[in-house]
Length: 364
Image (cartoon, rainbow, N blue to C red; front, side, top):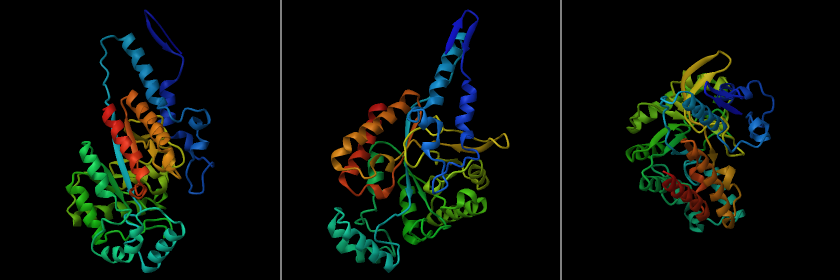
């Protein structure tokens, strides 16, 4: 693949062409191979079909290019990147038994009873009281209210997390089951901010193709943050259900004045959708224009690893996450993890989450 002599190096591979194709998501332009949510699925990607989805292929090739450049120009100094981790959380359902109508409360209790969920059984008995209390604040005894637990662990590891909130509704069935701007949600935002973590936007289901709705919800987030006393210079975003269409979605995000997006991962498989674990500038492949929007590729959503996980299988999940973290570490990239607050109700789920923090401290 690489030849070098006294005149320099010859790469028998179009590294820059590959990088453009992967980073711009040119592969997804006009694709009809979409899933029921209108998403480009991992299974349709070249990376999945050819077995390199779990490798940061663009980063690896840039390392090859960098070595060739240093051989050709020995005095050349290239910037070195340092491995990092980004822990992020989409707030779809902040609590199980609060911020909902009486009918949905009854349904949730019945579903939990029928499924014999082995969470804190006493939470079921307390559910009506938790529901009533949520009119003012989120009850810490609710099984989905894991925000302080998350922040406690991150602060102990010296990390700052990002929490993305739904601020509108474009699909009553699929969007968040809580009223945007509710006093209890504003209190949660304020607490997250005071503890040094980040508040961001989780745009509703249909906004990925609706620039006007996207801007409306971004403006709504700014208003809610102002009411909550949250002072941030910029706001980041992750699209609900990881819905994304190139180039319409990044155009809408740019028009909404959002600083970065961290949607670009797959809903059913972990890995490197963009071929990289480095943040980079978005590009519109139709117009041939660079955007101000920054992209932070999503490497793993927890459900791709632990959905249906039995406690006895936790070690396998931890090992797979560790492999992906090492892949990011090898190229000095960022391991971006999405972990919903609702996926920490069982001890084995928390064990896997804490294993990520432990592995990060070993790698950092």
